[in-house]
Length: 149
Image 1 (cartoon, rainbow, N blue to C red):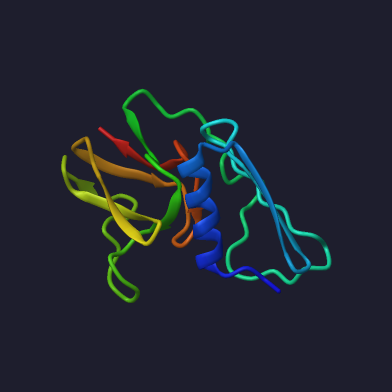
Image 2 (cartoon, rainbow, N blue to C red):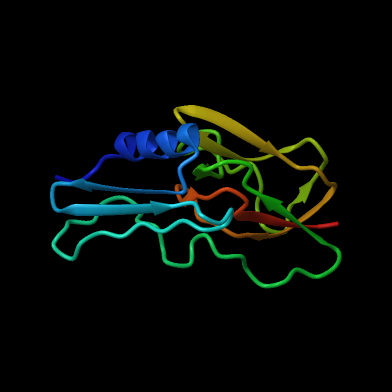
C-alpha cells in the first residue's frame, strides 16, 4: 500500500498541530520518516521494497542553496506545504525567471491542509531564481525564489 497525497497532508498537519519534530509511520511496505528538527530540513525515506509514487523528497530538498549576492532577497516558505507556480493546472505561472515583480504581487501558492496560501512579494525587482519545482513539498523556511532588487 502506497500513501496518497491526502495521507501525507494529514501527517504534515499532525506534525504542525502537535509541534512534532519527527514522525515515523508505515503504509504497507512504505516507511516514511518525516523530520522538522531544524526549520529548513525534512527527510522522507521509503523502504527499498516499496513502490515510489508522486514526488518523493530529494535528499537536498530542505537544504539552503548558495549564498545570494547582496542585491538579492530570498523568498522563504512561511509554512510546510506543496509549492504551485500557477493558480491552476494548464494556466500560466504567476512569475517566470527574469520577469519583473512588484511588492504585493502573488509569486506562488503553498497548499497546506487543503488551503491555498498565496505567497506575495515583499519587494519590487526581478525573479533571479526559482528554487523549487512545481508540485514539490517544501519545508518551513525553505528558499522558494530569489528576487534581485
